[in-house]
Length: 286
Image (tube, rainbow, N blue to C red):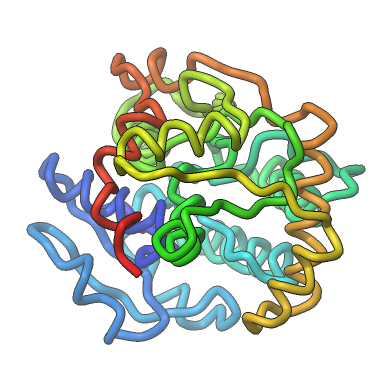
């Protein structure tokens, strides 16, 4: 049995889908049963639990051999990761696959990257074999700009001319599936990127061609971007963290391209052009 945390999220739901399609028994950890309808499938069992409530984790991990830890984007991230790792120790889990992030570092000025590094440090001391997945920014994150792309033909980001090797969530999930179901991935770290690093000008050009309408990239200041996030109800800590991440990208840190997807899955990683074609209808929706 394989347990997936964050099972209704972008990476978790795709991992559940791929494991189910491959015939593996999956237990999906969800906080509310109502969210589980979208991930139901053959061999998928639903467990209600919360990383902030250790007692629910003990029940969810009963009979589980391997677990996929997807830390939530939460100010309590390190504590939540620690809770889950401790529960895995109590349950005798044989392997943990952890979703981290490209560039995670204990000294990082980006809180998200620092929290991932602190989670890895806890894993290193827990005694359970683990695999560390470090993806770059997800292509699916660009879907947040759907309203302005559809209504204005504009993509607003505080990235200046930074290039980022965005990776499709489907490729991240495919690496996770291999790590969870094959021997030999314990102790490995996989930096996961797409096949190329693109600027947002280049992304806008691809969207223009795929959607058959002009899409322009508008580089906004970090201050203006934060204000727009706050107007949409984003907590200030999250808005500041996103801006810190974009500052890291503007320094050139997100442009690295790796071969992890190909090396682990034997498949060619999905290009942004293919991603845009697959999600064209979503980008055209208002």
